[in-house]
Image 1: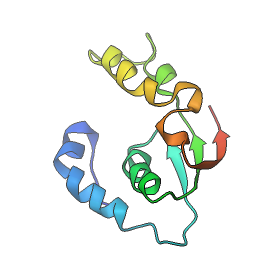
Image 2: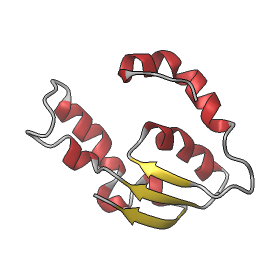
Image 3: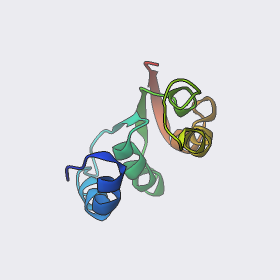
Image 4: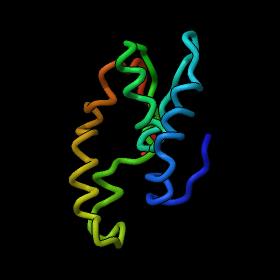
Length: 105
């Protein structure tokens, strides 16, 4: 997988990262997505389009991660508002084809 450090390098490498992610899952591979992670966010649409079932390991809820006092960043409210709706009670976009959820939060 293409290495990147921080959001600006991610944006510069995004096309290569998406290509890397598309090439790692074979048709008979079992998949467990670790959410919230950028790799999971890149891979999930591919799995959903193909109707592929997958498991999810929840390691962070953006609503908690970007809560007031948890992160000091000028865009913290934006990140919380942008990412938290994707996982409302863990029934958002990622939940459509999930066959198993493991919550470690």
